[in-house]
Image (cartoon, rainbow, N blue to C red):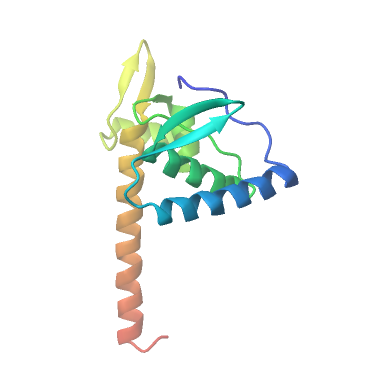
Length: 149
């Protein structure tokens, strides 16, 4: 993956508290200014102009940090190794390679190594999650029809 190394530690308590406060404030600002497409931020005496999409991403990142999670940003076009992709799906690498070889997820080869674009991995994950939710909804409907609770 062509990005910075993954964080090795979780945020400490001070960072979690600061992230929580910042996420809440940023959420309020974004809600109060729904038409604003950019924002001016001052950092060490320098003014920066940030697009709204970056602010929304920052809010989401801060919200995850506020829950004590380590966070990594991956560009949609990034290419992942099979191990990185398997880790993101929480499956074994051999199982993931099987998905690739079955044509379930597109991949390319760099020499003898398979690479998967993050966007293809996320599309697969979203589809898998959608299908799981539909099956769960169907099971719930059947249980209610059978008065099972």
